[in-house]
Image 1 (cartoon, rainbow, N blue to C red):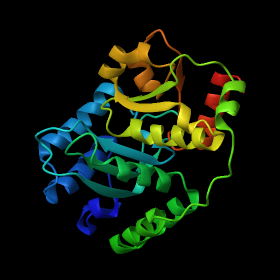
Image 2 (tube, helix red, strand yellow):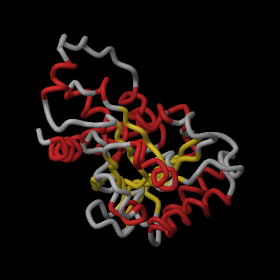
Image 3 (tube, one colour):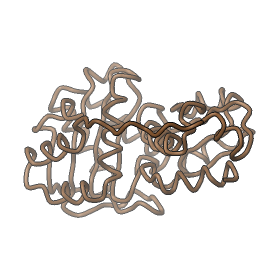
Length: 266
């Protein structure tokens, strides 16, 4: 993640006149780094006009992005911390004080960075440190510290197959879809959180979680048991004939855990 965020793509304590101005400023940082053109910035703004404030993934945090296109020269990030938060229109996660913008050259190159960013945003102590970081170098140091690989303890042996077969509602496809407007950004945040919960349950090896966009989701809905998305995207999707769960905070394992437990009757 840190390798995609240049110090000069970080702006702290900026002033924005509203959500659109904030997104445009974050896009301008991508433009100044040669990551993307102004067409990409316009696409980020248009996506919010079309789909609503679904990019406000967690309290105070918005993840601005659009589909990969010719307007993207290479994958990169920008970081805009606001002196005064602005309203995006999200009923639960407003106001926003941090806008991270991403331009992806394709649909796969940035996935590891998204998992790392989700880890950062879900950590309240880390976010508090980032709110008070004095300069770009301090921001990068905190991010590097938080996202550096650590050796995880070996998991305890468990008969996951038995646990999976005797607990909860029987599934037919063992497939969950997380959906956003473009399929390359916010849906990956939610996918990462869902997979984290399933791993803690011991269900990770048995359920596939797929991040996708609204158009693809409409065509593939019958292939999954469950769709998880935001309220705004849920309205866009409509009734697809499969259960749909609305998640407000895409980085909250507690919220996702509760939603999955209700779905699977456990």
